[in-house]
Length: 92
Image (cartoon, rainbow, N blue to C red; front, side, top):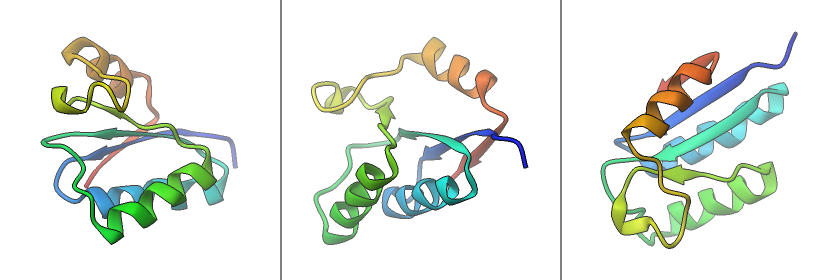
């Protein structure tokens, strides 16, 4: 199987999106993750997801201005470019 670039959009469930993104790396895919709709809340589930991202080598981005100091911020053009560059997009 050839490497694919999968983009995961964390829109409704940040914790689930982190788990899915980390899991996709098992198949040898290159995975990107973008947090959307609001800041990531400090919960045990999200903390565990952040550890999975670190272990998987995934460095997330965000479209949420309130998270700009914590993660790279994508504007509308940046998000559109990331979607266009991906082989597949998952929205969670």
